Amino acid sequence: MNIGLLISELEDKEVKRICVGASQAARDKEVTLVIMPGKYLIAEDEEDNPYDYQHMAVFDYANTDDFDALIIDIDRIGKGAPILKRDAFLNKFSGIPVLTLTKQEGLDVEVLSVNEVETDHDQFEQLGYEAVCDAVFYVANKSLPQNEPAKNFSFVDKPVSEALSTISKVGNMLLHRKYAKEKVYEVFADITKKSGLNTCGIYLYDQKIRNTVKYWWKRPENICVKSALVNGSIEDTNDAHKVVRASEIFSGLTDKAPAVLVAGAIFVGEYQLGLLVTEFTANSIIDYYFDTLLSVVTGASRVSYLEKELKKTNEELYEVQEELARDDSVLDHIGDQDYLTGGLNRRGFFAKAYDLLKEEFKPGNYAIVSYIHMESLKTINSMFGKEEGDRAVKRVAGILKEVFEDKSIYGRIRGDEFAVLEITEEQGKAESLREEMSVQNAKLLTDNTRYMNHLQYSICEFGHDENLSLREMLKETDENLQRIKGNT
Image (cartoon, rainbow, N blue to C red; front, top):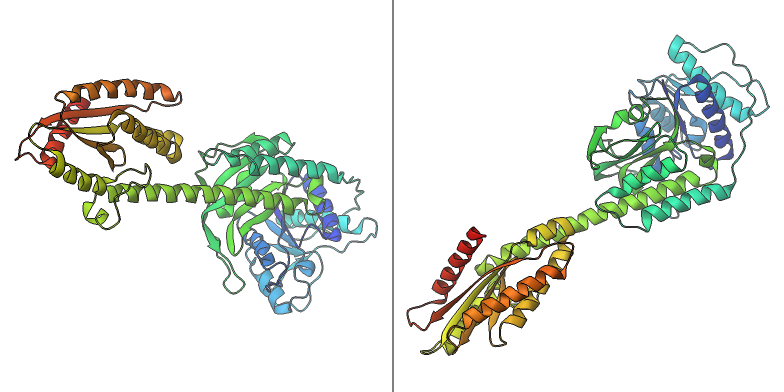
């Protein structure tokens, strides 16, 4: 059985005591209790806390079939709010049995109120305790019990230092370290388990959802499970792509054993990102503990989201560069320098190569045309990231400067391919260049122990012929390179 307890905030001393009593009742009755601190119905923008209204989004997770009954502290949630607004708020949960902590008058909506607490001893703890007992009894019997015996509470506050220590550990692990892909969420589950918790979860939407005072958000159907610790066991979230219905979050977390949980909305500015659910412990009622934990998780989620967007943008820029490198008609308008190596791009290479041939390719001279292909670049980008791939490209550009003379023309004509043109009076020089490239290629293989940066190359030599064009020389060199690739 799942019972929801909708409250204002855990920083309210009376609310804390209500939660203590409610949590004790949930454990005694062996039911799941989900505490939802969503602040207040007054949702006007304030200069100091302009997005406080975003906390109210957590209440929308209560309006599901996941709950058998709801207990709503409407007096505090709706303090200062007009009756119509309080009435509209309670009406949102018309399909679920709703009990309020105090008797409501003047409302059009029909709600139940818990039995009046008859003792002044630990009154608010007793109120929370009886509220859960009444809700459990009502679900089973469709009526409220006559009386609930007074309960003695021996809840002992934990020292603030212990809570600060937990927050410090979580914050240090999540915010100061860099993780591959979305491993940060896996780390969160591990941290919470080591801290003694049995249940927690981080749930995020694929896209942020705008939520404003004038235009309230609509909770999507599905949500991604980024991290889940269920009854002490870390769930496999399938590389952070596990999706569940947003209306079944709590039943998914507690399908093995009942638990007492606290949930809060994850948001940034005007945008809802998802939900944090964690076990309700003694630390939870320490001032600002849960809000701080929620802020740390929000920060980590935000960093992870921005890193994914940055990676996506870099990939898109790289693809654009690749497309431009293949389109002479576009490159004719944007200069001749390669953005990465500082050398020539496709347009620059062809422009300068034609000039060199016109000026230097005369009878008695030889043209040496080379194609160099980085066959490992895609693998390097895929396994080690675009930045490492860029370093590999720059390293190859440096090798070409060493092998070929200063008067040679070389350029990156595609993302993973270079071309070189040299005019020389020395017949047979192509063979010595092949030997030097072989030596440099061997050195390149030993440069990095993490991956193989291997080159395939074709170096062809052409004697002077007035009818021989650069295109024809390049075509023959490229065909030779394709034959080499086919033989390796």
